[in-house]
Length: 305
Image (cartoon, rainbow, N blue to C red; front, side, top):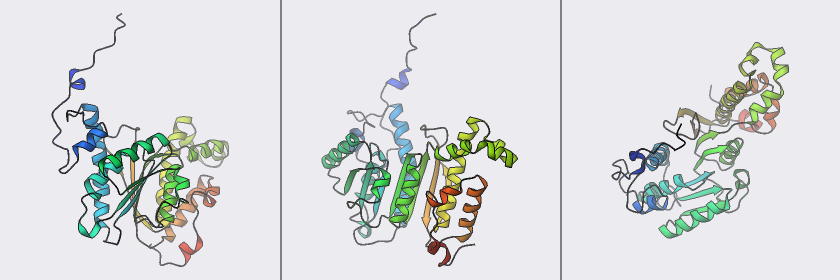
């Protein structure tokens, strides 16, 4: 049997013509700096997939940005777990850089824990003249206390913020009175650990615990329950929530997109269902941490049914 590796297909190696799906007005220089385009302006198969993924998410966020009313200083957006800031740069290039007069002056804040990526993003923004982009070397949790961020942020995004970092992004959005939150959760482990720790008790109490008796199912159920709880929590705190799937993303088997819109009307029913669900799964302690429901947020506002 030959030990030689199979040659890659020519289609994977050879650059292809500039993709017609590149959006009008998109800076080709930016795409080159992000290594989506080659220096010759070509797009290979891997880069095409990456660009398609970012554009797919951009379409959702662009619609939200367009819904925001005009205000002094323009729209503010905080991108948690920014990584190389593909999303932030594309947003700035296609929307913030060319905003209509009513929305001019907006700002993007990229928040990332890896200092080397923050520095590279700063250098690229300077090179391209994207002067209304700020990159901060912070965790999601620490960002809530950072004086470099404004008191209010219109849009909060968290793309594949791992495990409880997505919950930290939600807490940040609540503190900053965000009009919209766009979340793609990832690597949820906290609830799975709780389910695993309480498995024997749960199995003796309810046959539903069979749904997470096996370790693989514990992980899957933990992920599912986590996102259900997050949606209920956002609804209880006054957001309307839609959930869909990002098609074609390869980061994980499932890419759940949660979009939350502030209604200004905390939902008592959602809070009650959240509390009951946490109790059902033996997770009541999380009401004091991840899913705290301030009484004045629930009791002293008109609530949705």
